[in-house]
Image (cartoon, rainbow, N blue to C red):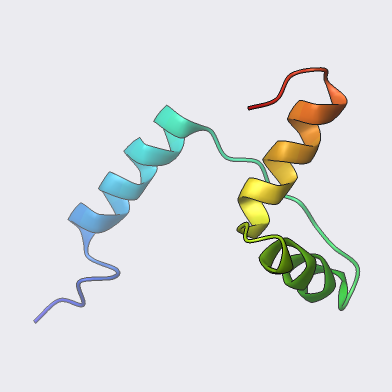
Length: 63
C-alpha cells in the first residue's frame, strides 16, 4: 500500500496548491526559527502568519 503522505496524487496536489498560493523559502540561523516561532505563538499566530503580518505592516498594508 502506498503511503498517503507521499503518494503521487498527494505530491501533485501539493504542487498545485503551492503554485496557486505561492511559496517562499526563508533560511534562519540555527535556533532562530524556534525563537521566532515561540514569539509568534505567544501572540497567537503561526510562524507563517507572523511573517506575513510583518511584511504587510512594513509595506503599509495590513489586515
